[in-house]
Length: 289
Image (cartoon, rainbow, N blue to C red):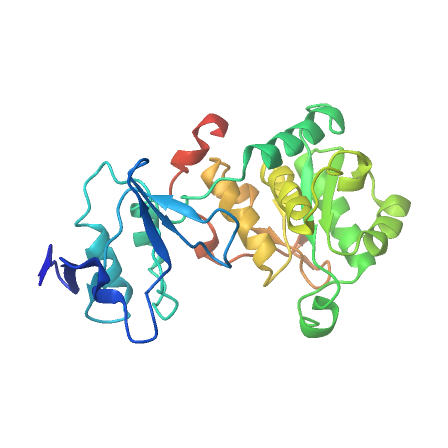
């Protein structure tokens, strides 16, 4: 038996064990009666798991995203977070509909990540406006040869962006700092900063992903951002900037393979529209611009 059916959502089962099968439970779980919370495994068995106020078994008519939207529409307005387990085969929700429900803006970098980024901005950048760029190298130099520029072309384009935006500082996020830094410090017409500019900033972070997240936050807070074509790292920075309220025009440009001029102006390489949210992120309210 089920309740709450709407559209392609077939409803919530009255029996939470209905999603279990012969191979075992849908997810490992237990109920803590003292805390009145469900304890569930999270992602790759992250330590401590995750606690939830409620645990339900949902029935969908198909793997299409509209069924998920129909399911979410049955929840009360005071429900602000939903962890969807065992939904790996579901198709993605269209970005405009996802943004209307606030689905893409649900995550915010943790306080230590943001604090490290803000410290870099205040101490290294002296709180002054700056250009941020993401230069993906390593594997992209082999598998994205049609769109990935060489170091000299990057430097040439950075100089062009600095001049156009009237900026004197550039922060470079890259997976190959030596490759870019050598060329940048020789010929970039402005002050060059990398995460290593403040060597002790991230020493308390043990995982490389945490340091990368700090780079993302610094880039998201920049006055102007230029990314790498076809890069997910770049795409998240662009999304993050839209949640912060940055103008799309300050986030959408990416490095071209080469600096080309059209009628005396630099040719623009523009990112796909879906990388920019249609509204500010509610979780980012204190940073809105």
